[in-house]
Length: 164
Image 1 (cartoon, rainbow, N blue to C red):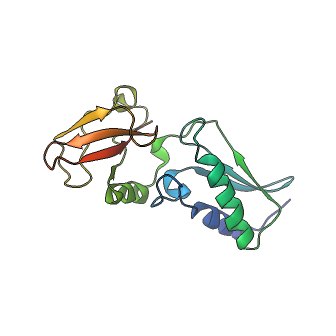
Image 2 (image 1 turned 60 degrees about the vertical axis):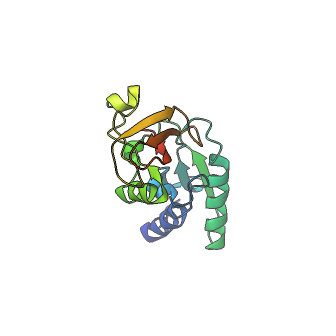
């Protein structure tokens, strides 16, 4: 099936605007979860990749994409999970990283293949006061993709979106 480029771009925009259910200030485009929108033999295919294998938000994201496209008048599409290559924080947009910070979550530090991905970040700036005088309290925060940190300067706890 051949689909006009303008239609695929519109579907990409609509799907990309779907908010992450766990961090509602981010869209799935901000996160890099929206991988591709293409025409396939069975219609339009929207491909998404979970941030973590077994991420509980994926079913909701899939449903929200379907509802958004249906509201826009589209039919004949499928939303599919793509697991390879695995999602990486390198796919997050700069705008998404800044939205995380403004929301009170420290964005990932460094590249996914770097030391921080193996051993955890050494220096994470506080999203409230920007101090780097911080410490990790727990490897897991409010969700499995975040760690719990505390700022020693302003004394506020915060989540850090782990690099991977």
